[in-house]
Length: 242
Image (cartoon, rainbow, N blue to C red; front, side, top):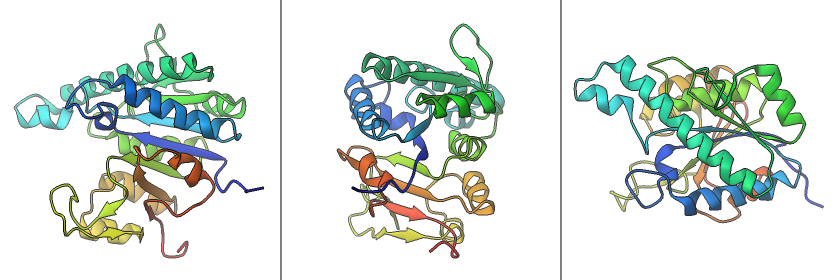
């Protein structure tokens, strides 16, 4: 019998990934695929927390570049993550997977407020916990929210789902000569300014020696491979962990 390497994980899913092949909106096909992937590891006993982005609906940074107040734009982006989280909850529960949504911005009619001990208890009872609303503060991305919530609930790793199969020297969709990294240190990510997660999230993980795995969401069975410790995508960790 194979042994699970990770028993409690944080899955970071960008809003852009939820849009699928479209530029905006939510793809029901992608949501269903993601729910199947989560279900596959859930039945193994893996405790799954999820942080969703909102870039498929609204991006505060892009809006601020057009003149909108940055705080206002970020709050709108946080509300977009709530929409994505509720959509994910719906598809998971239609597949029979118990789910809770916790939000950093209180809206009791839609989701629970974020309470760390309650979130941990949900995970212990085998419920998928979806964290929305980012950190609840402007100027912090959902990458940072994923790193922060992962540490708060005692996850062992952050799995960051993207459209490519790891971290490259450049965008492989634009530069065919881009080379993939199998393993990186936090310092290398920061020094090379690689687009893994934003610098605040990387620094938070670096200070706590918290591993990050970047992988292609569209690869069937990839979450199962990851929780068993197979070499998939790119792992970012400290030199002491390498």
